[in-house]
Image 1: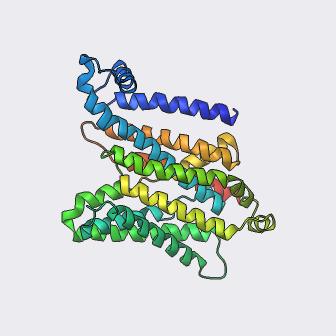
Image 2: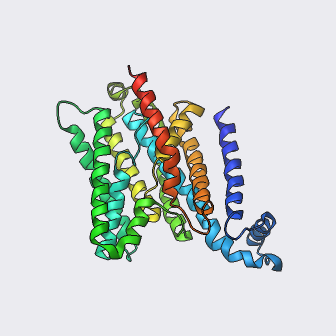
Image 3: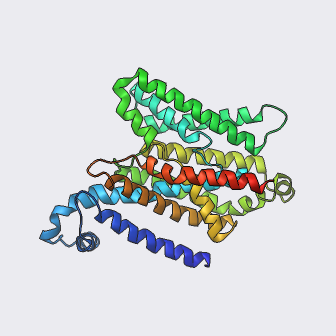
Length: 336
């Protein structure tokens, strides 16, 4: 299928699934009520009286949550796409490399220090945690005779486990912050607000525009560092810029909804299967698929055990972990 038609199809699927997600829940919202409320919002006319009971659940709970799901999924997918492009490895993503856990640790420290009430508190500490983790992973992988992609991957996994252990220790030592810290480590979009949508959405929009304009360079570096340097692409500079942008996106995502893993691993791989290795197309398809995947996972998480909610990260892990194993095995045998 031509990428343009695929994009159109995914947009239609996103809209359809968004309406389904809004409709499904402890309180079911009829499709007609959804149409009437949206129509009233755009035209300025009053909502029909029989649908007024759904106004608050729709505009303040369901709709911002659905929109944030699409944004979070797109953000994580974009991060995974960028990572796999610069590392030229299909099994790299910010979660596997420990950057998500680093951001989560920064958020946990902000909570314990009591500065999470400040608007920049959690986001700022999450960004610092993500950047320090990235630097730590790259420093470990640089030790020895040479830096290989496999070394970076293994260093990231080791650092990820190390950070998870620190977070566990913080939870034990600070029982009063148990619930808040667990929120960041397990991932949830239950507290979505329009403020979250505006913050993360604006950052995602700027980042994807920047990545889109650098997609040609991402295609070139797939040919190797030497080839990229030959045609005038500064590989190290581009890599560092992308790592900073991705770390910023991950930090903002963690600050808004905690750690949600494996979306950045699974979605870019599926996108390349659908549209090939042209990153101009892969970036857009990954955005749409990531949003769809996150929306489906969150809908399952909040309905499968209703009225209780499961962490959305547990749903993505159920799908992502087996897929990661398959990728590891296929990557292992393909390099023999």
